[in-house]
Length: 381
Image 1 (cartoon, rainbow, N blue to C red):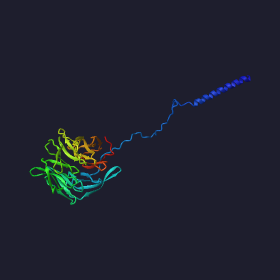
Image 2 (cartoon, rainbow, N blue to C red):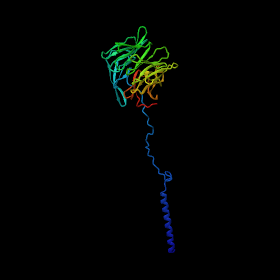
Image 3 (cartoon, helix red, strand yellow):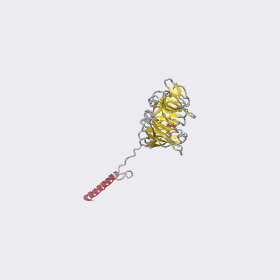
Image 4 (cartoon, rainbow, N blue to C red):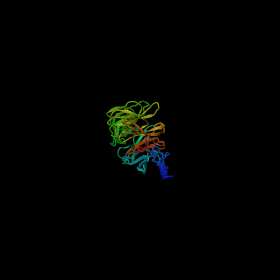
């Protein structure tokens, strides 16, 4: 074989070797079609294998007990730092309010040394000082006793007293007096009814009165009128000015707002015997429903008079039987309300908020104990 043929064969061999090398190189650079296509970048899954994918559950806020024994007429101290209440035997207790870990606690419970009068149904605390008037609901008549804090003694009021209320911060009261002929008068006087002044005739023998916090307005209504419709009326504290505020309906009760202008009352439906909550405005004359079935014992005002807290039944009928309630927070300007579940069977009476309106306190008629509900932490339904 000549040298020219050998050179040609060698060149062909080198070309074959180069082609094979190039093919091997290109195959090593080909993307893995099982993990990547069309030059798409594959990002590895970085989720931890032990990650908890369950959504976080919201904390359920429930009403909680504050006492282990029955309470009567619970009320917040004037300074907001404690709660006072009676028991069925007429003992008066005071406690301090503490908050620990988001929980409300009663501490430093102490009994005040006063004479005991059993079966107190409600208490009218004086706007200032430590005096009060205790109410006793009996058959056939309701009676009252004035407690003089300076003397630490009760004075029983005459049985001729039919209704009463504190006259603002004057230290005096207004009261309805029924004489031996059945005629009634509106009087002012000392808390034991001494030193009284007759202001005006009231004509009907079954009038109840409610005095505004500033002592400048008095509302009255008939409460035992044989099932007929009645009105809610205004009289000035001097007995000289009268006018009708609520004309129609089967009306019961008055609870003044702190602003001494707005007030709550209830209307009874004669077909169902259920009570619904209404609001009146003395300045504008407006009267409107707040669309909650309840009674006044199950309501409270906010300190700025813009919110009403009301317990309305999901089971039972307010004023007629034990109930299981939801709590309503009603903005009175718009009538809009938020609804909260107490989380426990609660027939809530004697409702009152703390000074910051974080917690709502109430007596639960299901067990006669004192409870609280953290409305700021709770979620509306």
